[in-house]
Image: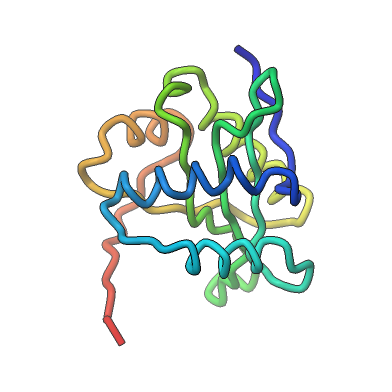
Length: 148
């Protein structure tokens, strides 16, 4: 099944909500409707750096999402793209939807002159890591969070 990747638009909101809820559940993150309203507002604001893509099935139903943004790379004196969120409807896994979303973000990055696309995932996300290992190089960097 072929998918089409397009920028998020207002008509995608119901499907995006469903996918966001699935993404939060996958990572066991409590997410409220108000939180999704906030993120949707960012995604619909042309002045916000956070952007979104959605993969649509042949019937135009959202089956995957990607949120991304630029980030400065001072050591390299340039910019990269950060893929914040990637989620594919479980019914669509194994159909290269994630590949299409990642490649769409990469194409945007190439157009904007970014040097790379970077993302993180959970160590136990074996299925996702299989895709990521095929498409990109795992780095040696370890991530830390300081809760504020």
